[in-house]
Length: 222
Image 1 (cartoon, rainbow, N blue to C red):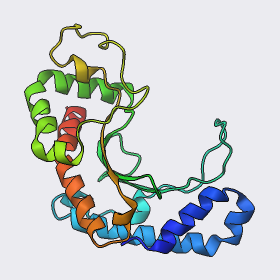
Image 2 (cartoon, one colour):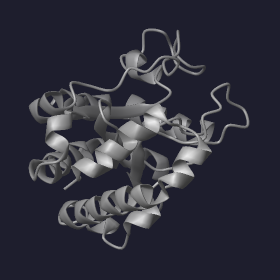
Image 3 (cartoon, rainbow, N blue to C red):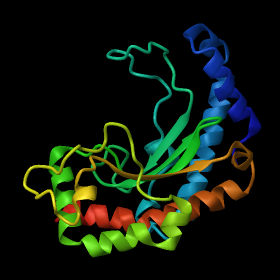
């Protein structure tokens, strides 16, 4: 499980996002990072029972660096105030859909899917939805999916104002064809993070997402 000290480190980092403070608290960072890595290793082992393709992964293969790339950002704070891990059988840089866990006090969530794919992969996914809309509707409309995620994430800037070129405005799949990302996220309350239920809750969320990731990846593979 996630330790309270890990959450405290992230909370303190949010208030002291600068290199001198980080260097002075490097041991606390390393302990928090190791705790998060241990949770991700446990998550891989548990979810791997129903998604065996990920069992070769280690936490280090999935976790993102805490350092921010500030070269092209107005926000010059040097560190992220979260720990994140992307679990994908082909690695965290894969173009395929996968699973994500985000740890941040007051803003933790889990889920996954396909975020901002390149034009080639996006075109393939749209075609898959167009060809197999009833199946896609069934995945998103299932009670299990709606109970955990509510529906696909609606992110600012991630939905076109009109259907993409090559599709008619009255296409039955028009609503989905406008999406530029296909993700689903479930928020996690802070009270859940330090308890034993976090692992089972996250595994359930990932299992619920499996039909969607399989659908998206099938489209990319074809």
